[in-house]
Image 1 (spheres, one colour):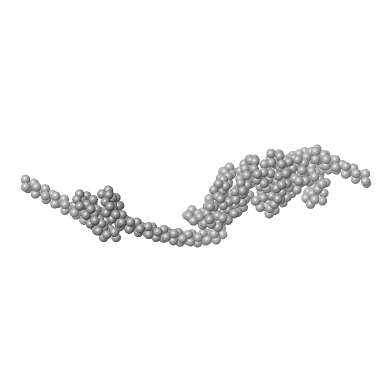
Image 2 (cartoon, rainbow, N blue to C red):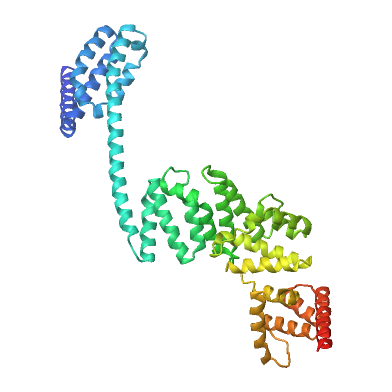
Length: 444
């Protein structure tokens, strides 16, 4: 039996040796900091598992902890030590709880200092990165080839997080797409800009938003792509809803312009221009004429340089002029058509020449009428007065028939060429011409 127990003791000793060897090997692989923290963890476990003299062992541990502090990672108290300090036996003792709190507070203060230092370092790094990006953007903006510049700007925007730099790059990209007449990308770039940022580029775009939208509208006159139209509507909605720095009256005007001229809607409104269009399309002539006269300062401020800003006014006035013809206000229609045509935004020469026929002798001496007469002289090549596919030649035919007093044929030609219904007016003109010719014949 004694041999059995002796053998058992020998096995225990062998296991202990192997275990010790394993621990030593583990320690060899661990860093010094890890070894020290493992050592501290063992001491904490000893105190934690003590059934007697707990407070005495705790005070002893608190004295020993000081030599392990330098091994704490990032100056943070290890989790096992924090958990130990949160045990009920420590929290319930005023002296032990106070000692634990005092120890932890030292690290909280140091952690705050370190956090502040990290924040300062981060800000400095951002400034350095910002300056580098600014330098990169400057070099991109100097590229002369639009295709290459566009590629570099798109790449730059993908990695740029600074709002001011992003807006500067976006403005440059908008200009490129404007030259390329790529209206879809112009819309997307303008919508992507952070116009709520307080930088010079955002402020400039907000102040000149009508100009930017005008450039888009000028390219959308022939656009019927529903996706492009939907993107523009979305842009207007986002500008109206999300930015207090933009003049809302401008956006509301552009929204009405879009509804009237692209979506063929006719909402009632109090906008100076689109109120006239609303009244015109609803054939409310007396109200439309009163509104036109009351807001003459708006309609007379047409830009003769063909600025996109005038496009909606020109389109509105061209419709109003047609209603004026329907209501026999021929001279008013003639003058408005003439002014709109001078902007270069619409070609209204056909309507103007038709009104030269309609007004006839009332325009004698007017430069525009003289221009029409010079154009009519070329009509002598059509000596049989045959119908033509050219509407301008048709207007010349109408003028010819009126002057031979066939006002019915003249009115029919004008209606088929322009849509103007002027039979009664041309009957009066024919009668006036007849009386003048009759008087001339008697004088001679």
